[in-house]
Image (tube, rainbow, N blue to C red):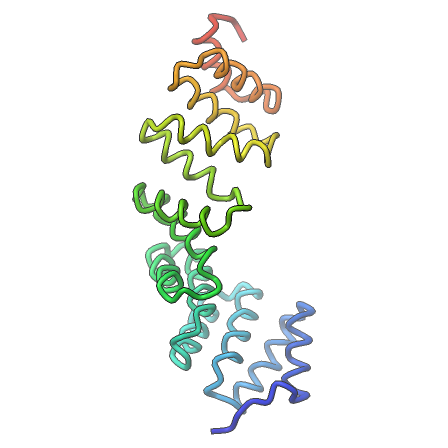
Amino acid sequence: MKELNQTDPAYVAAMTLYMNGQWQEAEQAFEKLLGEFPDNAFIMLNLAQVYYSLGRLDEAIEMNKKALEANPELGIAYYRLGVCYFRAGRLVRALEAFNSVVESKSQSHAMARYFVGLINFFLGNDDTADEAFANFRGISKESMIANFFQAQIKLKQNKHQEALDLLKELAVETPKFSEVHYMMGQALYGLHQNTEAIRCFQKVLEINPDDNRAKTKLTLMTDMDW
């Protein structure tokens, strides 16, 4: 079987087009390379990403699957396959792909855990979503991306203090995200800390004066007209 030399001028040229975002030219270059190296998983992987960038999700999905047939240990292909399925709205298939990444312990497993949490959240599997988000936060401590969804789960479960702790972290990074302050108000209200809850709902209206939910909460809590 002919081996690809990554110093080959044709490969270098294809990668240059890829890195420059010249997708149509990169497509032609990688398809030509794949004709010469039909079993090379990395060419398939790059070509799949080109198809994805061109918005051709079905072709990207099929090419990622071919890359996995050529190299079943290619965790990044599972991750990219999951992203393609997710973008296409095929959530169950996306979940299968992301779970494969988590199980493989590949370098993409942190964001895969986030997607596992997000998809289970959308599917109503709160406990599984909560666990996945917690694992993601443990791996990627500097990221607050999962706090928003995990806090919603905690609020549904009436775990108000846990929700509040997550939201306080998120509020530091996103101080003008009105939904965070609204959810903090809900958590504080659940903890019977009404004065602090009122401040949160007032903050919501400072950021978004048309938020009728916050107006209603304040009317109920302060008996004032808004």
